[in-house]
Image (cartoon, rainbow, N blue to C red):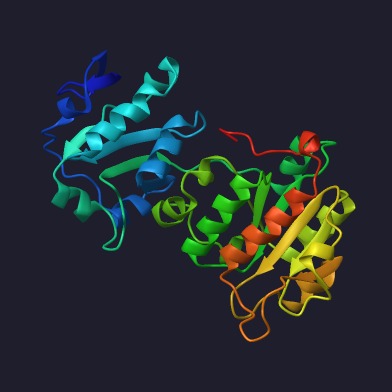
Length: 297
């Protein structure tokens, strides 16, 4: 595994080493709060989130930390990377388990792996539509004020699994795309672009003008999702748990669909509901015409 080692002057030299050779860094690593307070920088943790960030050529990685048995996982991750990508990554630094625990939030399941990276450049809605061009059977996901990072990350993971081309969120009501969201997304943060818009209702108008059929998901929907029109390009619109879809986004939808849940227990976690809706669309889409999300965005 090839890394760049740093000498005392801070200059980088190249050689062949293992993660363990990064041991002994005198400088205390940044904590999650310190990292998130640095403009343009985020902290990622967990094997899938870190591995996906290291593999993404559009993600600049500034530091990699690991503890204990995670060295083996990190070696496998590096071995699977192209040589040109490995050459751009910093040398991993070994820390003690308490030091890793100190870096991340108290409830973070880090699996002994942490990376400090730069935020991704996400496209505007217009740029995303230009990139999609004339593709058909494209799925876009629209979240109406869903603010919990675990939920957004889980929806993003399902979006990637079912080939969604983008996730559209409202700028004022989106959690930061850092460790909590990335861990829940299990690597999908590197695959599905997140598009921020100032107004969800206006964004739906733009999507409709560009040929998207906007389908809202709500417990009081007029038709079950299995009977909903889901051909061609679809924007699946989901509201926050509890409030659901707000009035204006709801009015912009071409159709409000529902899941066929039992009336005595009619609610699901938003990420579960999203996965069912995405599956239903993909089940009815011609496989050869799908527009899967592209690794590396």
